[in-house]
Length: 302
Image (cartoon, rainbow, N blue to C red):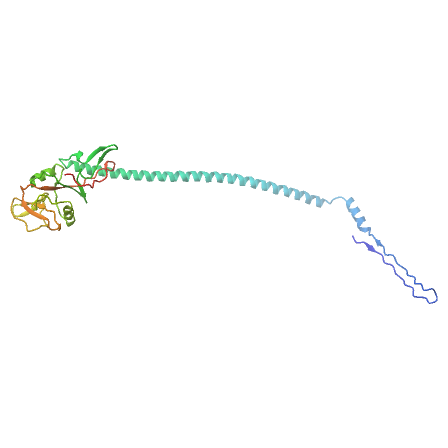
C-alpha cells in the first residue's frame, strides 16, 4: 500500500523596512495520510467466501499428489521385487556356472584317465606279445619286488640300453666259444649283437676293454657260412663291415669286435671255437606305466 502525501504552500514574507527587523516564516506541516482503501479491501476480502474454482483446484491438486505418491510407492515395490528376482537369478547363474566349470574339470580328468588307461592297455598288449614270442623269457630278470610293489625295467638286470636295444657286455673270467656265447644270450631271449649302423658300432666300442692279449675280443653275431658269405644271427647278410684287415675266408670263422681307438676298424675274423668274451643284444621291453622302474644305466656286472 502506498501512503498518500498532502502538500501545503509555504509563504515567505519580504522584509518590511518600516517594521522591526524581524522575519516571520510560515512553516507548513507535511503530514502523511494513510490510505484506507487497501485496508478496506483486505477486510472485505477476508470476509468474502472462497471461490468454488479454487476449491476444486485444491482438491484436484491433492488428489494428484496422492496419485503420484501411490504411483511412486508402486514403482518402488515393483523395483524391489524385480531386483530381488534378478539377484536370485544371478546367484543361481553363478552357482550353475561354477558347477559347469567343475563338470568340465571332471570331464578333463576323466579324459586324461581314459587316455592313460588306453595307453596302459596298449603297453600291456605289447608286453604280453613280447613274452609270448620269447620262449625263454624269465620275468625275474626284468622285475624285482620292492617296498612299493613290483618294479620292472626295460632291460634285464645289468644290461645297458642304447636306443631301442639292450646290451650285455660279458666281462668275467669265464669265456665261451661263439656257439656257447649264442646259447647264453638265448637264455634272455636275446642273440649275439647285430651291428648295422656307425652309431651302434661306436656304442659297442665305447663299452669294450682290452684283456688278456691282442687276439681276444668280444663275440658278435656275425659268422661265415658256406660260399664265403657273412651272415648275422637273424639270417641277414652283411652289407657293410668295420674290419681291421680283410677277413679270413672259411666255414669255421666268426667275428670278434676288438677294443680299438678307431671304432670303424675293430672287427677281426677268427676261429669260432676260440674262447672269448661276448656281447648280447635284445630289444627294449616296454612295461605298463605302473610297473616301470627307473631306467638302469649302470655298467653290467662281471
